[in-house]
Length: 342
Image (cartoon, rainbow, N blue to C red; front, top):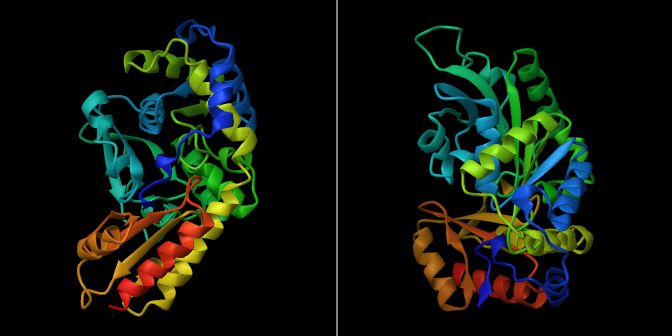
């Protein structure tokens, strides 16, 4: 199978496995795992932030980030298609009594104009608006890299109004490689940032939540409460360190493969590349209903050996990653074009 379902499907390389096997370890709940400590220091440095905390998943990193800025009865603002709202089970409500106010956007980027009337007044009858959340790259917008000027403008506006800023940077590494920027370039606008090692970078497990030292101290306490305190986690941190050293720059290969797929979609009359845009490693296509439903098209290409996700009635998502070869991309292109013309 050519598996284009997600960049979380990558397998550790032999060299990564050796790095894991050789990793020095300790008890990270006591902050005594040297490999975890090295990863946290490295990640904080990359983002230009004071501290970082290794967590098992991006969902945990985001939920800790939200909780750091909001308490029960508070709310945060996010795009209606944001991962924290669409794919994390409303954990902020389940666990912490926090609510989300979702805002429709054209491109996944909130703006001051969209939010100006949505910030609640200081009133006993309403939730307290505390936080603005962004996602970069934006998953449901096809791996879109947010506009840097727009991010800066929004975060400056939010800061002036006393609102905290959290960035879901699960694919921030992709945004950096695609835009020629550094993680610190993006992180400077936010109070907290979550990043993921188990997507494009190809590590088997793990994310990090980054921010000021005092907030990360609170984050460590929250991680423990959520069951995320791991013991000899250095074997996992070593994989993430290896990925940062060896798999960061090669994200450009995934982006090139995605562009090849995007061009195939553009050339197929029964398919449309959503927003005619492919910034990084995600391709979202729309199937002409005259051909078939999105799910039917997914089943047809799966029968020919290409796995992907149907994310809406007529929309499919294809994700390129470390374990997808150029030859597989060309095979997938041929299959998609053939079946789109059927």
